[in-house]
Length: 405
Image: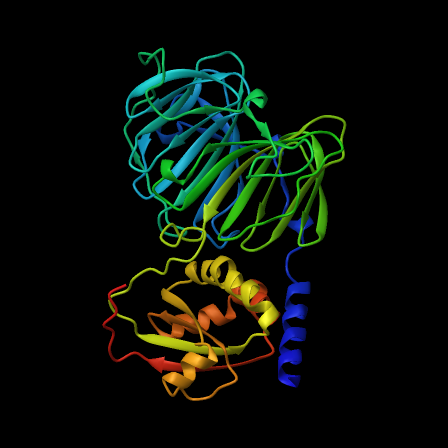
């Protein structure tokens, strides 16, 4: 028990030194934009910056870019084969192109650029466009592009877009949905996971009236990236609070508890995108199959009866998602010991341990990286250890595996 308490104190110390929520917030400052020209062989110039990058989250989120597309300027027609983007304009209107089909859409508007679809954007107006670009990669941290040398200037327009698009319209949002609860809070899911090939899970429009707050939400199996379209308020993550205002970007990470509050005089309006830890396991438990497991770890626990339900939920919604973003992770299982009557019938060895977690990595080296990772130290282990009174573990080299699922 002394060892258990010492470990919890060590974890608390590490958590206390981690990045604060205030440090996580990035303000979109147009005065710091750098000027780019001929972006993806497009016309004219644009201002550009990166707000959130590939190393800021555990999932396969790649970046949030922001900028100003100048009049008669744009991003040329191009492909990505292992990332998905979503172009956003917050004012004016732009000509969006997907796979050679072009339509003019009035902002605030969003257009997902799905993996393998050629895409472009062009500002035909005499006013600058406020632009965002979210991206999620198929493989963490990896990106590609192939330019087509096509500015799309003077492209033929389809009066009705023949590609997926959406607009941020308050009148389409609804109160107290299953997505975001809270007195007067409005929300709308514009795109779900079926739109994307990557682990992109959702795109939401969230509106919080003056003086109101969302109920606390825990990010179970996914992370979120937020951009404040307008208004001001506070973000609370695991009780750590910070002020937010128009043009701020920030993120919520696996298993964190998030509350958004409006302390201003107008609506607090946000664009929220979610990235699942793994599309294969979804937001619950669905272990991926592996043909060959190199190592396995078995962890036995004594879980008080009153914690049974919480322990099983923790495994499905926190532990496995945290594991699934690790290099070399192959699969996991949760076991609950048979009831006493069944155990006696099969002459099982008596034991005080009543739960076991098994998981596999392609190498012991990668398992050690998991042990040292923020997802293990700050998220999975504290959630697990808080629900048990005793534990032990054993590691194995896997010499045979005949699992069919």
